[in-house]
Length: 157
Image 1 (cartoon, one colour):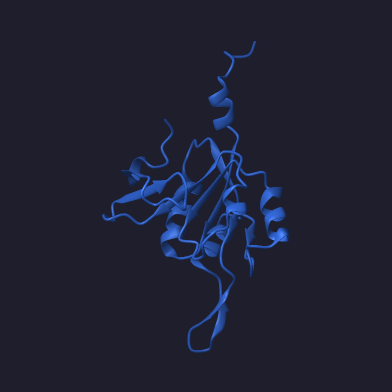
Image 2 (image 1 turned 120 degrees about the vertical axis):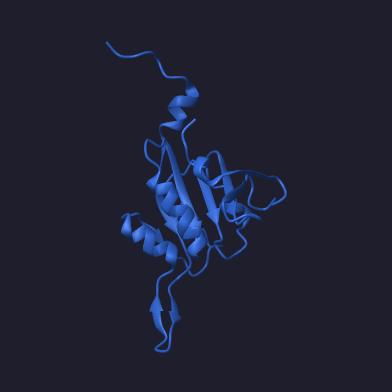
């Protein structure tokens, strides 16, 4: 005999697919917390970060901090040279994302990318205090943000 039927919100929450977009250390920290959230009702299905850049005295190509975290967790990583192309948009949509979580990607995202997730895009940005994370429902509207304690940010309700 199966348990009680799940509500629609529980069914949706158990299958959330996230595409994460970010580049520097701040974004890598957010990604690491998303991936490390135990008993979460979501999973990061892909990461989008900036292409490798030449760094150091030898100017050797180096991956972004986000690419390093994604590699450690074996998450598919996209490093597009250009994000405003139909090919990139198709690749993004092929993951059938429910949410797009953006943290310091480094480029203004076109509306076509913001419209790609089934539910909505979310923007995680550095707040006034280092112990908190801010999130806005739309990356293009920074003033409509909500703040929550870092420790509670990814906790299941």
